[in-house]
Image (tube, rainbow, N blue to C red; front, side, top):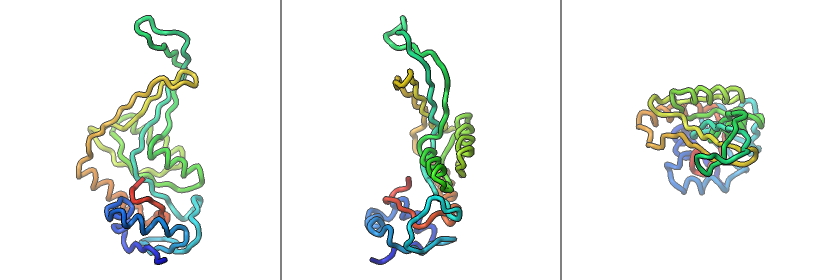
Length: 203
C-alpha cells in the first residue's frame, strides 16, 4: 500500500481539517500503523508505532477549550419558594474541559501537547490558561475581545448532578480570528508528532 505523503504544512492542514473531503480520510485510515510520511520539519518517517512520551515530538490539539466548574454541596431540604432542592455550598473545583481536557490527558500520559484554542479576554480565560499550564500543556491561545470563554458549571448535590449552567458564545468566529488560528496551526505543525491519526477532522 502506498504511503500518504504530505509535502507541505498547508497540505497537512487541509488533510487534517477535511478540506480535501472524505477521499483523503479513506486513504489515510487503512494505512496505520505500517506507513511512512514525508513531512516538513523534524519527523520520523518509519513504520514504528507512535509514542506519546517521545520527548522529541509534540502532539497538536486543535479545538475549543473550556472551563469546567464543579460547585459541590449538600442537599438537605426543598426550597419553600419553589419545588427545587437547596444546595448548601461546600467547595468549587475548576478543571480544563473540552479540547483542554484532551490536552491534559496527553500530558498525563507523558506526551507534549500543544493546544490551539480560542479564549475570551476574561477571568475564566485566565483561569483556564493557568490550569493548563499547571498540567504541562503548552497553549497557543487566540484571545478574542468581546467573546467570552466557554464555561460549564455543574451543580452537584453529593454525587447527584442537579443542574448544568452553560456560558458560551455560539456565534461564528470572524475571518480575521480564523486566520489567526490557522497561522498558529501552521507555526506549530512542523514540531508535531507525525504521522497524526485523524479521521478527516481536527479534534
